[in-house]
Length: 249
Image 1: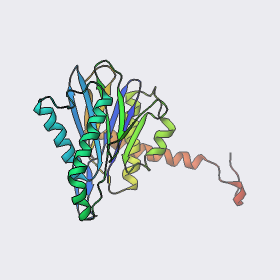
Image 2 (image 1 turned 90 degrees about the horizontal axis):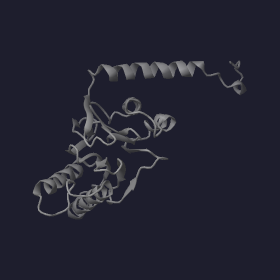
Image 3 (image 1 turned 30 degrees about the horizontal axis):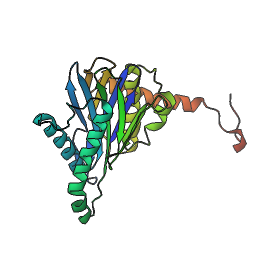
Image 4 (image 1 turned 60 degrees about the vertical axis):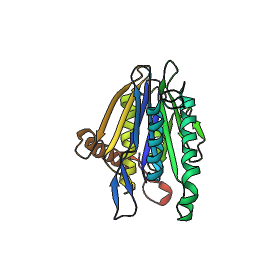
């Protein structure tokens, strides 16, 4: 299992992914879930993945091979906009499915994969897409400016309460880390190190890309102070008087 989240904001985009994979509690490894495709000043795209690691690694390899070939085929270097980039990734995922799904099924293995693709090409605004295992996709909007894949339920409530399109990249990065911390605390299959990346609208390059591990002072502060703040907020809420206890406040 994994957890990835991305937010589309007026100021740009935030991407956060963990790096834990597991095939049971006694077989846990670290693999990066984030791939970056960048030509500064022209285009920048970030792809995050969850699901079967063999499928997602094969997908990224095929995408990179097409980019390196420069033989007239579509690639992430040649598509004119982010919609076509999402369609290209979806079509490539279908190629992987047509090649491997039947063989996987014979071994009782489902074709599981979910992707988040976001970025900016040329003068169009930044765009964010959630791509499903079937290769189809949806796009983020101002009403729903973020996507999650993987173990999403633990980190979703805090994002729903806070996220706005006007949220700054700094605030959104903090929010993403709190969301990730909530997930890590509740699910052992999600873990450090993390990849945290930001893009600023119109810059067409990576603004920041940080690896967050257990030694990161800011993340350690987030873990400690957020837990304390939740505890204080809980203590300050009145008890339900209909249970016979004395009402407070």
